Length: 88
Image 1: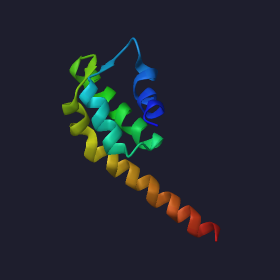
Image 2: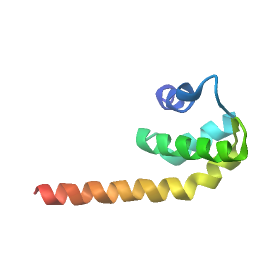
Image 3: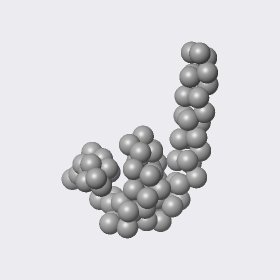
Image 4: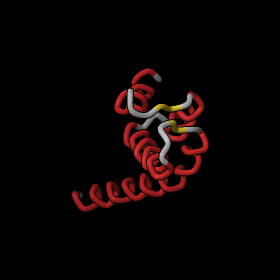
């Protein structure tokens, strides 16, 4: 269900930062509901708004961090593949 991934986005920062609804949708779509990728989107988006002195994460923030998130997630996938091959 989408309830758990959406809670993973909103709950950790509740009362501190706010996600616009469209930002949450973009994170869920871009992450394919994978918890690790959701967390990468969130940490990168929070870092971005902190640099700007803001408290609301927008869809634009999510788009701005997308390439970094997928680059980092791809590195993790490649490392896991290497680990699996080494174990064989």
